[in-house]
Length: 224
View 1: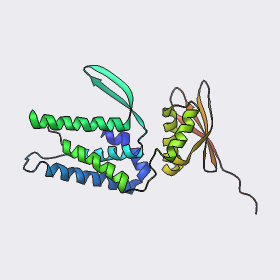
View 2 (view 1 turned 60 degrees about the horizontal axis):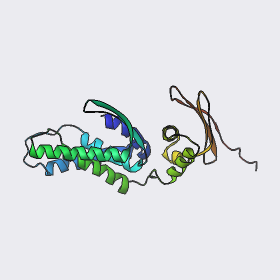
View 3 (view 1 turned 30 degrees about the vertical axis):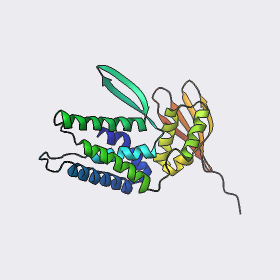
View 4 (view 1 turned 180 degrees about the vertical axis):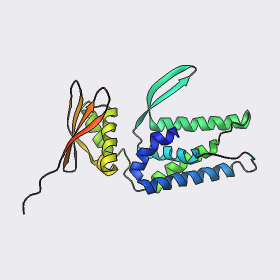
């Protein structure tokens, strides 16, 4: 459920509700059949939707390959708080499923449907690559990101503006956005962007890290 909360909204914004449901069902069905075929004869029932949610992670990796996510974990009683690229996170997730497979095979039953997780992940990747026509982040969107970074704006601020624009105006508009002016004061960031011929201004609070759209200016139509 945590994966669904973290990755689901961005993927849904990209795909739209109908295709998002299609991704969820497609990944879930592939995950269930893979688990069944690789566990024929098992008397242990399967409960949950983790295969479908793994598919959402797979689609997220394809659509937002350059994103970094914050990871909170405890390893050997040592808390870890760091950012990793989402592709590395997915690779670690896959490695953990393979570890569970090893444990299940040579030690004892883990009670985890690791084959469903693995094939759900691959199903989500397949769906995003071959069954959609969306703009994959990393091409045109990467140009906009480089403009922000060239003005000493962090990835965190860029993706905050990107996600705001995607949710309010659509993923296509977010891909098209270009930065016009950036300034940083004691209270936070002041950012002006251009989406096509429209200009948008944003204020980002330093303390609360809250984004506010100040205004939207559209070019005046020339008189006929």
